[in-house]
Amino acid sequence: MANPIEQLGERGVVPVVKIENADCAPGLADALIAGGLPCAEITFRTAAAEDAIRSIAKSRPDLLLGAGTVLSVSQAKRAVGAGATFLVSPGFDPKVVDWCRKNAIPILPGVATATEILMALDAGLTILKYFPAEALGGVRMLESLGAVFAGVKFVPTGGVTASNLAAYLRLPAVHAVGGTWIATAKAISAGAFEDITRLTGEAVAIVRSERKSGGWV
Ligand code: 3PG
Figure (spheres, helix red, strand yellow):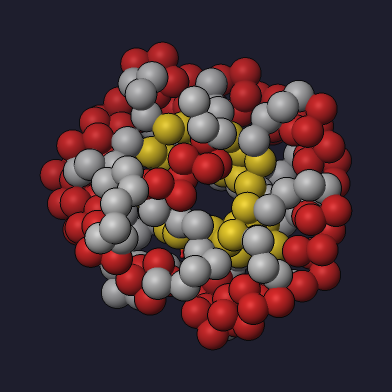
């Protein structure tokens, strides 16, 4: 099976999730699956993250499951122990990246500058989160970075929504995009799973129309 981070490229979109109550995790997973996007990055921004990952890993093994906002080696260990198959970090922490390399855990570290991209390349990583994408200059900035760093693929996250998703996906340097707009913390807590399924389906339709030539969707 392909590396989970490579598989994100086939999905095109990674729902970034902040979950306050792990009991909502199966409903969230089912809503994403029903919308056609069996994939989620559960962020370590709440106390429920670890249990939510454990719950989805156990009950929905086909969902491509990652842990986000991983800020330390100890969080990385907890995330993997709970069943996350890839890790995402907002920045490039050499300690976390080293631990992932030694343990063969796929990691998507965040970069915001050319210097950080060089650090990631030095660590052997070529698929990188670009965060916070819109605030950093969005599509224009990624065009500039993509022109310099041939072979690097980005997952822009931060300020991506259904309205600018297509513009990001059109960039050759974009692997996939990440964002919270599909499954907001509010919608998850409220159990608004039909809304999540609808927004998931909308995102999948945009990926399909931008990638008519094939791919996973
Ligand atoms: C992240 O966790 O990567 C970002 O905070 C998501 O940003 P968004 O809420 O603008 O999608």
